[in-house]
Length: 574
Image 1: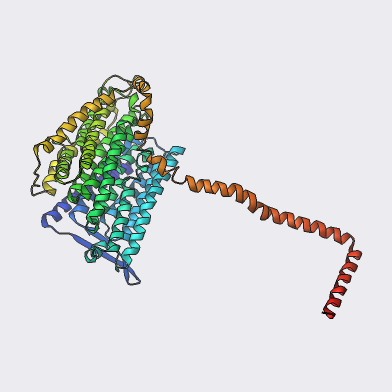
Image 2: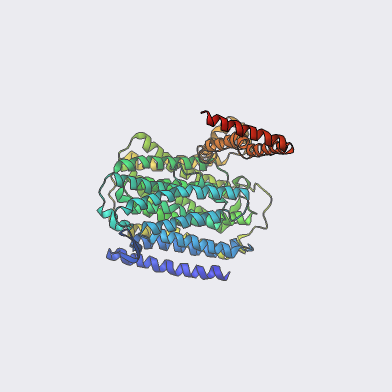
């Protein structure tokens, strides 16, 4: 308890300090670059470089604030856990790794924080020790290792320029082949960390971790590190590269929205909504609006942390159940949690005038002003509608209607103290921070010129999607049995287009089959016959024959002498 409260106050203090420092830097339009030279290797300086501008300090303040709330939240959620101290230290390592990624300007130290995020996330995913957690943790770790390899190759490329500090090297780089390769490597690293197609399988699997971890990972740390890295290397990318990867991000957004509408696991639905919002951030970034993507990243961090913490209270109080089909009518038992959950869900949908509205409304209007094919517009607006659909479905399934399980009269949120206080602090920011940050980030108005049908397109899709979400929430087991012909399609959609299968078992099936063939036919077969086993039989046969010869040694000796004599005669007459 002392540990949690101590770090709560520490993080809260640093959060407020960093926030006001970022306001100072933004007002004066300045930044600081702090360098500490460690050594020089082949004319390349190895140095610790901290880049402090208003963006890095603002993001760090959000990370610190959410971490402080999660620390005090964990005080009751992890109560009674025998390894709680280990859990807190793992969380601290996780937060420290994220701060290294945010503030470092040296790609080597970014890799240090990047690797730290991957390693500690593996330790946190397998915190509850069972086979499912082990598989999920290994999938998370190995998927992130691809991004680590991409950053290593980026370090090799930057070594030619004499510095790993990207602020000094990017200014001197021109758009050539090396720049293209470096930008592709950075995009690959960010796609693995932010779980974009085809690396989306690990993000829902990481739900095996405790809920405080999920709240931190999916709001402001692990998954947002990829978006933040792209933000720093935005000037490297050509328009053709941006268009290709924008399409992939758009498909990720669409796929996650579809899967969330057919998922029944509470935490996985929220995880898929994170994946959908990450796709939206990537789409906005590749459109060329990196400031708007960063703004949505901050707003998303707030309401997604609140959403996970509300879900954690529900799971904690009803005995660890996560299937929404067992829930229903919980608004009567958890009124405050229900209110916070609904506010964060409405912020996710972009309801005026919550925090999500100020970023999502601007994103939709900026996207509508671009010139794309009708297919791109259709996928984008349907993805926006799917967000509303699964949010409405989730609220109806969890909070409205009758109990779908045993009577839960013992479940009462009034017994919670620290959990509800952390929710209250976050819900205030979800309500107020959107307008405040929009005034700060976009001090000059953004000119939006759209025809009338595009202006009302979002409203029409939201209304249709809300009705659609209401209809999906009515599906029960009996309804599902009547739609068995729809079963295969729903399984395909809810499994994210079979990406988990493709990126796990099918990805290495050929190499595993080849290994099995080699083991069976070579290692246990011909290699065994001509190798150790064959050598054993050869020595055994030779020894047996030698023993037979040694029993008749006089005859053998005379035979050898006769052979030697004949050999000498042959040499004499040669």
